[in-house]
Image: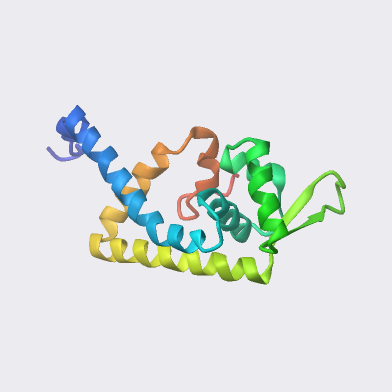
Length: 167
């Protein structure tokens, strides 16, 4: 058996196992969002606000069109959320000096404080799960999540350790 790779157990592809995975994802997402949801409710914000704050915080100066591309929501939906975040001073927008049609988004100090609070809560949850699961489980979990993500978003998750530099 030298030189061969272990074969995957076909039972993990059974309907029962796939449904179990879906249920785990639903419960994990519920618990992943529970504490941030309660914090967001204090501001009369929802998960869409959280996603905007998160991605603008992770990508300062991103354009509205880039945010739309990530969130896969309508302009109208983003406009409603973004207008509230701008009005309440969590986000500011500046006109791109190179292309006056583009609006670039940045968190304000108030927005950074909220983003930090929300991210710290979720980071602790993930860090605990990672520590308790071990490196092999983390690698497998990451591989599964990456394969759930749509193909057109895969480029966002290039692993620097395996990248060849030909991006």
